[in-house]
Length: 637
Image (cartoon, rainbow, N blue to C red; front, side, top):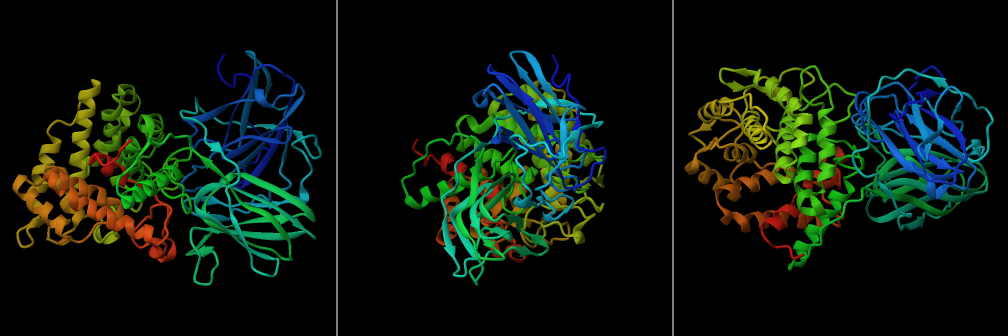
């Protein structure tokens, strides 16, 4: 029997309004093995008899709609109520592409469907979750929430007030099972609580960077609103920086008089500190998060030098914190799946986790490939509701695909996403002018490579030929040719890489500076341009040696922290003797973070003060030191 054969998409009404919460329930009778399959638009929480069971909808698209299969057997008593809370985001972000609101579910026991969503399913809009606010945390991360505990009515266990028959809604979806394991919810993270003296203001320290779902237990003598802020650092006044350049890192909880015990399982916070402001004094028993982690098994690693061990551990924890239902760049500010960021995470993960974390990598590559745009590039993130793309990140996706094939020899993925790779390369090559590629000029194209001069995607460089785009395309073409050779596909771009390499070699060399530069007029003598000239074979052997020496001596405009991986790889490609120079660079960069009290790797060298005080202190693209330590044979396991 096909999944959801008897089930229908439902919602409390025919309208599909942004930022709304639907509540549904189904009563079942079973004591044997029973599973619930469900999928939603947005996110969900599933309860049995008021007890939390599961949450976390996999990021997806209507044509690639993921469902979860959850074993209910351990929770069954024989007469049970399933309760479904569904948060329909509606409002676009860089982690959600808007679609019609809806829930679909079926409950199967011993091969027989005993309950399924349909017009007879009781439904209503939530009373306690205040909908239609559409209040963004950030445009990347999406919406925050407001919960009013004074309006709770026990519907998850036995209440039925206000419920009517659900409305069957039309959604055209193709269903696929979740391709990876579900995230695991852990017990509450330990915290240190500081009462600021008036009983209304509390500062909660988690001691280290943590990712999880907000939880609070408190007693209030009266109904009151608690404003909760979260962040990764404290300001000079000892408070959490909650508003940063239009970003708003707050949620709202309306406390009841008496005991309050609340968890929101749908919005994950990346943080090190919480701050709660009340309207009146209240007693706080606990405030923090239930850590939610992806169950990846880290490889044992012991290094001789304590500093190297600390850097390895810092990088590993960063990689762990930046895995949700897919890779995320930073848990605090964005929680987005980017092509460049995730490539760094994938390559580090091959070394950091048992089995190379291959199934997780595969699922992320497939999610990327499910994205659709008229220009055949990948959207800036997957899934994404905004019309924006970074062309170089589509090329990173091709390179990440090749690295996966070479790590796993999984030819089946080439059959599934090879067509997407060809479409990307065809579109990029179609932009060639006078033998080289020019930076993209449309408003939806951001020509970003990293956060350093001449590489940050300034509109001033749009339409100009630049070295990195050409070098990355050479690398992507070469990578796809290797994929085709390994998987039996026909390579359709014969000669393109050689022609592009030759044209780039001639036009981006500066005799005056003795280096390759970003632009043909000799401007942009950057480390990143030199590194890509080496990696793409644009520089001949003698020139590559010259460039590697300049990279080692710091004679060029420095690349950003995230791209130093490519700088180091270029140096080592020229001469393995640069090992010590690479280690010196890693120890300097990440040692400075440790000295500043970091418990995860930063987005850039500047930490939180970067990007007008919005710099992330936990960023997946900075987890690459684990690979260099293993490459250099420094890990004992």
